[in-house]
Length: 128
Image (cartoon, rainbow, N blue to C red; front, top):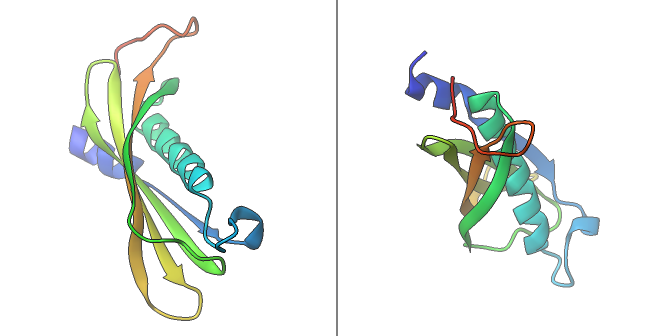
């Protein structure tokens, strides 16, 4: 399997409903909650790509382009964007949809870096 085929196969999509218990006093999704969900989707994508133990080592610029209101549906899309020897990057976008309309917009985007590790948490080469 080529690298491009593996990247496509490991793309991860998760849908969530935004309920009031995940929102702030403005009735929009907490930024920290968005980042947690993004890291989870990025981890799943990285693991599906490598099928190795992966750990988050950094998050690059996360842009909050628009608020995500309570009562909407979000889709998180994670896709490997860079492949190194022991590390890889996953770009994650969050799209927001109105529940009862066809409207859909990108709300948040960011990139997460992962390193493959062995049982002793030492970096190892990514093999696939």
